Image (cartoon, rainbow over all chains, first blue to last red; front, side, top):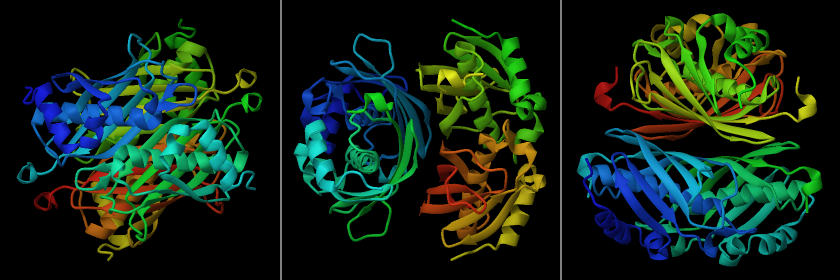
Length: 143
Length: 143
Length: 143
Length: 143
């Protein structure tokens, strides 16, 4: 069951993560059952030489996308924190928006684990793949 | 043997990675035998709510620091690419500069693997720890 | 295109990895386009207390399954070696056979990267998820 | 402060992990402040072709060594479970015992994170390096 809409999550992120929200580059496209789809706008702020999107930008895309998927399932948990993120860079992204398909594999009381597959828009080739773990705070600490 | 000085690596990064170099936030403090020490200037661009440094900034610090350690050993290899990075976030960084102690564990013909331990300046507590793998291009592709 | 059949891969593994093959516990169920399905026979040699399958056994299942997927695509490359494996343990496996669905996300000239989702037979719940990188030897070193 | 001796940990492992303890191949050499040193006896059960120690054996060595380090600090927590393990294989081990130097980087109330550097006995070269996360059960579930 989805407990927060895209609009509610956007409002939450603007308040809690103004640095990311203000860039305007990370767009929540959709949230679903244990999942989210997140878009990174192609922009030369994110670039490495040769016009490809940088590692830290892809890291941020996967991390925010999985966090959004968690919010959608359990509500506004500002204190959920990333404890581990492993990312494999597979091929050069194209010079266009990057889409992260984010899927939660586990959503427990204390830990959530998910994976994100990132593709250039319009392509099926996985550019980067991440798995990450989040520590969920005890209920009493939830905002 | 160190084949590039800090000044040479800085000039190389400005040319090849202008987006990171222009921030002025990533400082090479020292390069050594299979190692480098890198500093991230505390600045609210890097912050999460509560005043802590963001995951993507720590990712970038470890990634650039290990890349610098590789450059120092093998010279200007612009096309070396990160293939895998795994990062564990251990505790909240303090509101000051973050230091990454970067160490290469392997520097082969095709792959380099290193680890980075990140501490708030003046502290011994590891805030985040990363290991990463870099693909080294065949010599003929070296700049 | 599949260049080795299940029977050919089994014969190759018996010769090259007798320690794993002799256990009789790792069964290749199917190989396909960039994929393989591998089964670990439930057996108390693999157990932790409480009757669950051990971490090293799940590690081996993912690692062998992805190696089988690579063999199926590129033929008998005995010297391909695992360079990185990251595994998340999500929930207790049941007391029955464990199936690994192995998928290659990249099969380059020098590196292959894949992921393996492991489920107890008859269940959809992911028990463990691994991603791994393999270094592919230059052609001249291929057997 | 160390709360369990090597002998106490050995007795605990024999009872709780008979499959590993019975092999007689995993030797606790020492426990210390946030650390442990673990030895894997060289034996052809652990071998890959060419006489090297297999990935699953190195996985098990790192995992058990870090678990031992946790036990030494917090006492007999049978239900602590590995949630993530990332391992980089750096070079071929030699045909002798393998030593894992295990160090806890964090030991929190809910999560412990450590790293293990593995070297062939008598060598300084790191053969494999692992980082792992353990979920610590709430006190009431402790044995």
